Length: 338
Image (cartoon, rainbow, N blue to C red; front, side):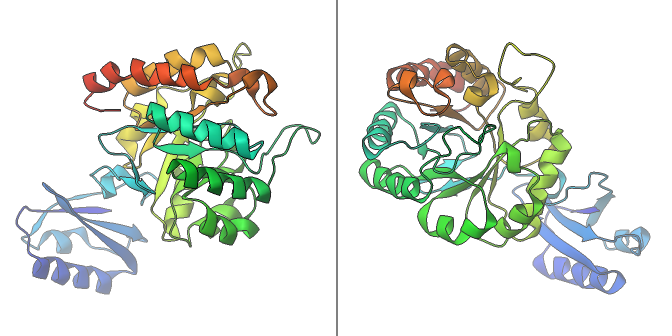
């Protein structure tokens, strides 16, 4: 339930109304005071509430019932866009968050060289996999904790904050100390034990959409994290599984405006995993910016032909530089900047 208050409602009136509601039912009251609108978002069993009694308060403009099961991630409860800070970078603001780096960390020289290159092109966050969930148990699984150390060295050299994927809730303390943003991969989107634990920390979480997840399931996974108290969630569309086999996945570009309508959380697009083909990364990046994505996550490798993971979808630093130049006009056209 959402209670929309009239403009000019004082804090004293908000407190009095909140006290009345608390006596009527055991619900969590989330006040959201915006520039043009003040609301009280009620989470819990609202069946005991008497709407007529609430509407009797002169400060109440109207009452809205919310049908969606996700509350904290719901735009109705939070009309203003959420902006998440990752290091010195902002995700969700006017400036697009450009995340770039290799699928996996392979060596000190590799990750540092790429970090410096993408920074020069305008990237704001460095990505790199230390722990790699792979379909085949025989494929390269990442350098693990050594990879985390190399990412930290690349951060020190480039000044870019780092995002990398977590696999186990047992590693949260280590990630909390070592990285700026914790990524939950598509295969772990519904690892609810992991999501609950991430809800207990104060660290940005980048939540990728599951391979076959609906938008509501995706938002419900975000709700797991936010319900625990951590509201620093960034969503990432990375392609879903469809009947089409030409591309690795099908990038659901329509998910961006849909999520923007339903939720206040920032949403990124990963055209690398979404297509699995490096020549499609540039056009899909342009499309994502055009429909309102808050940023892009691109796999960049200095030697894609010899990459230990996903070389076929990785672009070179020079190609990334061209993409950055290419999307500036598109970003400007939709009221954003690179």
